[in-house]
Length: 216
Image (tube, rainbow, N blue to C red; front, side, top):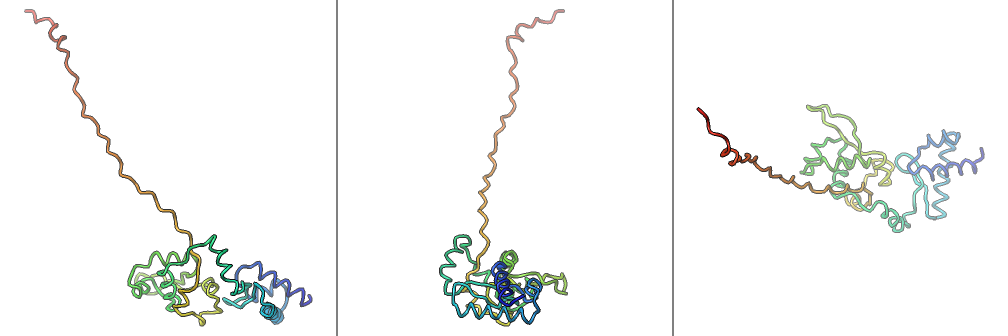
């Protein structure tokens, strides 16, 4: 296979993937050895950088991904806002930062640092696949341990955890959250139905007066 054809195939794969693709995955699909696969990917990175168009190829989260040009971010955000208008809350970002820097960490340790219950925010981060369960800590109760995910690296554009941003950078990143559930309608107390007391039937006075007297 010629370089031009192989490079076009790799470009198509990165465009369609929507997430980082490892060299090993590209190599197996394109059926080119690892050395030449990496060389072709590096050429794509250079080509996109020189052209400075709306797309770039970058190395992120232990793989390679096609992403939008940061210069186009204001317009891309407008598009994203039509479907994902809500960012993670401050408490979620704070919790995510603690997990990122302290992993593996259990929920009790997160709550000790934050000073508040963290059940809800940890659940949200798990649903967003920004954190994951790493296992159980070998202490009484064997609590779950949490750590960051590949999606976490992808969101922040990191190759690995050595490039972790500061807390301020965490706060400046727009991360779409799940839509909030519609509030439940208040349940009105059941209306008590007054049941009338049973009314004893009135005796028919005329009937008693008409009864014949005892005959002896």
